[in-house]
Length: 115
Image (cartoon, rainbow, N blue to C red; front, side, top):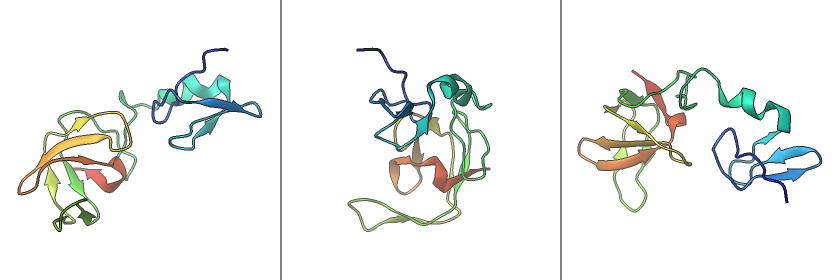
């Protein structure tokens, strides 16, 4: 069995081939084998961008753009909450941070904008 490249969008190693395309079962991204290397270099060192398309980096300050319910709690992270000193990680929730009054959290980059 040949070794397939990881997904260029989420980094998953569970990719499979379907009708000449490579498919990621985790994020449903499809790409042709030749374009995988071009997609991974989109200007950002990590490839993680905010809701406006700005590249994010470790240590950035971001602002929440949507009320976010905290799973397993009745608390909510309100729109406009500033989050300082973020850390980028792989996976579905790609930002690790500490929010004042809430504690340690993982956020999705699509719900924040760079400040």
